[in-house]
Image (cartoon, rainbow, N blue to C red; front, top):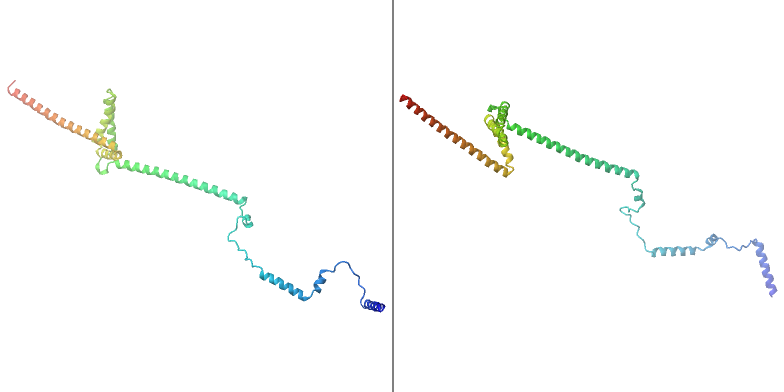
Length: 252
């Protein structure tokens, strides 16, 4: 019985070999593609379903928002950092602005100085012009001023052998009297101008008022005394004339 089964098995093997050619068996595993190609379709579906379930279960991450401003560490900002040419241009701009500001300050200072000088010159000219007498007054500065100088020199010559106080006061007094006599309008204008400047210093103005009062009082006293002296002299002269006439009438 066993022999028959072995014979039948051998016949079947021989028939299979005859039908299919003999292939060489390799020890290595067949390539992966062969397994994939021979894999049943239901395995692929199960794999797709598992991947789909994993995607559905995994939480969705929000997309990163675009920053509004670029951070200093970003490559774009680093690429915009100023180079040597930009730094040189910035330094040149600062130097130009510095020179412009200082030149403008110097120009304004020079213009202010010139304006003050011109204003002072104009004020001085107008002040001197205001001292001159009007044309209709008939007073002339040229001959009158010469006469005043001659009078002051005469007072200095007269008092040259006197003391230093008299030698100093005589030309001033004689020149002032001559000026008030020959140039009254000009001297009044000068007096008003001096008084205007003296009012800025109250102590000086008060002393000026006192001195003016004393001078005026002295002049008035001198005029009164001179009038009294003239009257006394005239009376004495009259008395002498009467005495002489009486003596002549008596035949003395």
